[in-house]
Image 1 (tube, rainbow, N blue to C red):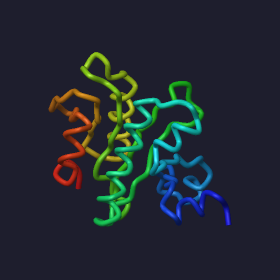
Image 2: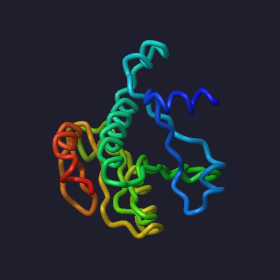
Image 3: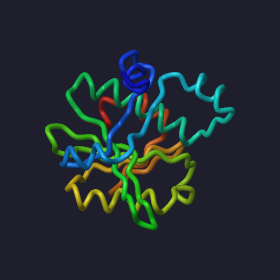
Image 4: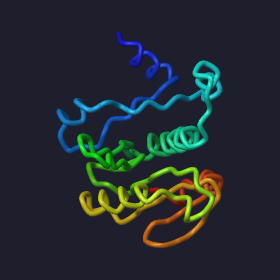
Amino acid sequence: MKLLDYFSQVFFAFPVQIFSPSFKASAQHPKKLFIVDLGLVNQFTGESEIGKNMENVVFLQLYRFASREGFQINYWKEYGKSEGLEVDFVISRNNKVVQLINVSYAGSMEEVRPREIKSLEKVSKELGCKKLTIITWDFLKEDEIAYVPLWYWLLNTSRLIF
C-alpha cells in the first residue's frame, strides 16, 4: 500500500485528480494534495502561504458538501503551455461540470491576477460551464464571475455551490 493511499484512508490527506473525460489522461497527470491539518504541515515545512492555505480550506469545505451530495471535485490545468493556466476546482456530477472555482488571496479587483480570470473564461468555454467563482480574501462583486470573500463563502457554501 502506498503512503498516499494510507493517508487518504485515514482522512489525513486527499489527492485530487485532473479533470478529464479520459481515465487514462487523468491517471497520467499529477494529483493535487490537500491536507486536513494545515498547522502540522506548516510546522514541518516551516512556511505558511495564505493563498495555499485558503485553497486547502476551500477544498475541505467542498469535500464535506460534495461527498454528501454526490459531486466530484477535480482540478484543471494546461500542461505543456507557457502560460500554464489552471482552475483550482472543477465541480461536476455525472460528468457534467456545474461550477468552476479559483481561489485568490485578493482584497480588491486589482489584486486578482488576470490569469485567474483568463483560466476560468477559457475552461468555461471548453466545458460549457456558466457558474464561475473566484473566492477572495475580502472582496465581493457579482458579475459574469462571482467574486466571493472566503468567510462569506464558508458561511453560505450550500447556497453558493450545488
